Image (cartoon, rainbow over all chains, first blue to last red; front, side, top):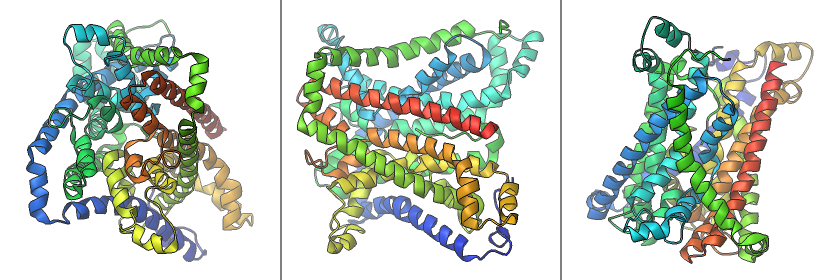
Length: 288
Length: 272
């Protein structure tokens, strides 16, 4: 159905007042609750001038936080991408017992509080955890160190790619791949020549959302980081530290970087939906 | 279905199970074992401590109210985005996803800047005797922000697929616009609305980053449950932290189950 219906045609004979009031109320809510906080980030970031703004961004601790954020995302996102593709392949190309349970398990991290997501790794690898004594003996540090940040980030972003691919590959069916098989193609050949071209935009879409969450995650990494400046602080944690130091201009300057990232993500996401909407699967409700 | 025409079943499923086992199941097992270590009496002691109980009430109470507000606002916004055309509609549509894309810490300090007594919005509310930042009301505002997109995004596809003939039929039979909405459209939208409500609720209950800045975190007053876990961890009370974590997880499971049932119900509804 054509989603855009002109206002005058929306209800022949009916007044225009009700639609106008509804539009005004909806846009008012969006402006007040969504746009205003976004605007506040940039205004507060520049409140003390451009000099303070750039100084906060080139500060060694900020640079270290940027590098660490990029590093964590560079490990977590590819791992979850491969996992998402494998999960979608297993879930949509074969029938097996317990498939529904597996699907629920893949979605599980979305319904776990970020703090609990961090907590479970502390209980596993922390000094008092299951593997704590063994790790201590071998001088391996996972919690309050970079590996802990990576683990927590993998956990919270685990479902993103799988969630985009599973409904799409389900609706596409496996006819093309089976045809390729009959014609003598090998497994990897089928994947790279048939499957991948069919799912590439949905894959990109999932990676985009996965990356945004990986770079912006706060609660889970906060629990496992130990907040060691310059060593285990990602960008969101650096925002918190500056904020708690009453360095508001600095906190908002670093926050504006993350807000830029969010805007770029939204822009690319909207572009993908607009340009390749039909290749991103039937619009299913999505959330995280 | 015995046909396994395509290759890679063992490889993909094996990889997926190993990955999930190591990264999801093993850590969750550690949580369950740690929490069970203190026994039922210990669990009860931890949960009935007044600060924990107060945080439990605040987290679930505020999350419930925020999800109700988001259900109403989400219905309005989804309706307007699907049914009317106006300048900037696509832009506003994209804006709905902002809470998904904006890191929670950023949202937290931005909301605090707005609602603090000297903030853009706070300075107008203080003369009216309304304090938002550093009160439970601040917790509510942050939860509304993070949960907002869920209802809109679950309702939009349903609204788009509605056959407008039904409404025209109702109108031609003499129903008023309000009657048509309440008696014809609302029952069709209800399953999706409930799903969005449950998703927003689940997200709000567990939310941490955007809440802790604006909440002020006053024990017994504006302290949320995830923060209780963080504080217990800082005091090295691992078993207590695990106990609260298990309770949060158990309640999330109940919500997840409810979402699953609602989705099944909504599908059956749509097929009728």
